[in-house]
Length: 95
Length: 137
Image 1 (tube, rainbow over the protein chains, first blue to last red):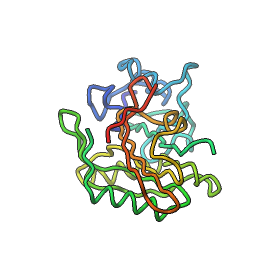
Image 2: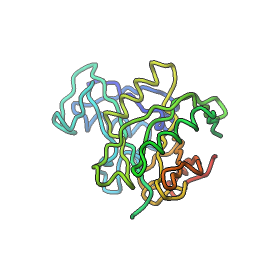
Image 3: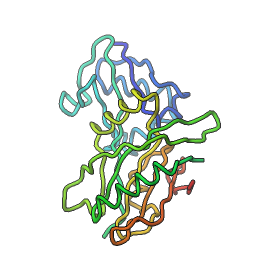
Image 4: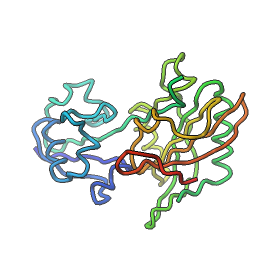
């Protein structure tokens, strides 16, 4: 199932500066795995040591966070667009 | 290298003082040239998404706000180059918590706000191996 994955600016250093990547998969999980296999340097920023998608990486199908759909098992159809969206967090320390 | 015009620096300081004693946060919009130098054109203030009782030492920009910032930047012909936040009554240096939650490539501007008055303003970039922040301003 060919889909497009939109890459946020910060992660384009791992995709040869490409803002969009074509990937293949019947589900979100398969498409992201296919994408990551083509750009292995990005894997450590997407997945933790257990191979789980990092908590601050969110994936949108169109305008909808897949957490509000079927999660990583959300089915895809031809021409769908996924967007990787990090959450940004920080703070002044453990006070 | 990051180029932060006085107008953007002053706007960040103002946001930090306005949000005191809580942390402010927002996106840095601008452009990056072939050498990797970043030029910030303007800032985009974003509401701190953390729980009210945590905002004195934490901030979060959730994915919906992140997407909105990317969209705003694209409409302006710019990119999201980084993010800023304030450290109320705390130095303008990244905490371990900042490092744990940072991404490479982005510039992270921090302004210290002491008793409601802005002080040092610094900018940092996370090392590629996530081990440390490199000071760039």
